[in-house]
Length: 213
Ligand SMILES: [Zn+2]
Image (cartoon, rainbow, N blue to C red; front, side, top):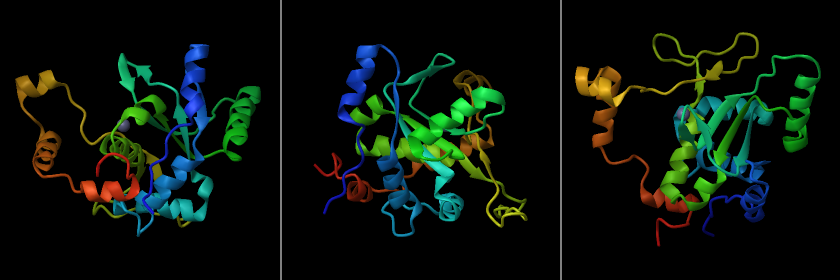
């Protein structure tokens, strides 16, 4: 049977429009779909770059959770379609209790990382855009590496040491225009010249929405 990618609940965006506020809901089906397709060895979009996440999930599946947001967030005057955050409640007292309760009510647990995506974008995005957004967020869960690029494992738990990683390339167009591209940008440009590694066929096997039609 053809797999269909997860879509946000139908009444959810309407309700947010009615309330004129951004609403958020847990997305357990999205998590399952990401695990099956990106993290499992036989997944149609499997990427060994995320093996450390798979390993951490094998140990404790509460490591990661997903949520839909009814619309994009605005940060630094830019539209944010997805967000990966490391859940950290530093403040004590009732604030911490309230935030943890929210997580438990939603997911049944307090996750280590939470990935939130814009449901209105995901609803209208094509399969390739949708898959790329989710993989972008997964890449933010980074593993610490030694000088040789080997993953570092915690002596205490034996599990990969993870952190909320930044983007590989961040630069202003104006700086590149005036001063030229640095090594990271040159590398990105070289990679962008190649056709994408994931084919439309692979995507259609796990989304089956609009690529094949
Ligand atoms: Zn990002």
